[in-house]
Image (cartoon, rainbow, N blue to C red):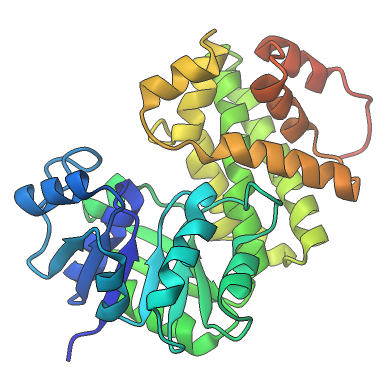
Length: 331
């Protein structure tokens, strides 16, 4: 019998992972909260809004009913934005059995209290609920287009990590497993803030040297916070750390980078978001990470200046000058 998986979130990433799982032979059900959007997906057999011209496999089905998702499979892969993560799980809970397994490809912190998403899973369900995060350098369009990609699946339950790896692994999609859930979560969340910073620098026309410096020092900030929260150093040098950071900071498929580019070119946040037309996780992440840095007294200057651009109307060029004007010290 074919493996079944239910995926929540019919944006670009959720749709891409649903296409991937279905191509790998899984019976796949994709849920979205907007019935009109789901009806359009069902009619056209593709997500014309986010992934136009990429057709759904025959074994990929869609629904807007949470009850249907819950009865379809005991493996749930959540791909909704971080601000909707807890509410989505809470809405699902009444429909689910005790055997449910929760995975997520959402990157970010809970905007209400800054906690990591595995803490939300444990809070809504149980600390014993099998849980896993999927992260790494992966643009949705390239995954859906079947271009080579490698990602990390982190879980404290090794069997669940392997099960997910088998579902997603294919000829052009390589999966690695890890037990460092915290490190993978932190890498995936903080890199979005660094991508905004890199975009700002490129929008200002500051060149490749500046971009390389921001990426390198950005990795240092990721490591500082990640180690404080309980992540492992080696995770930040892998796919879910350095790999995802490089991808998001250097390619314009990144919504966070595109936001930074627009800010560097003189546009406001609202205008930039309207132009992008999709969720930009780095905006809320900047606020949550800045708060964590203050709480734990961690030096995160790129995060701080990005936060001030986003929330205190600091001029982007002044933010760069603030970074360059910091006191000299050893690397």
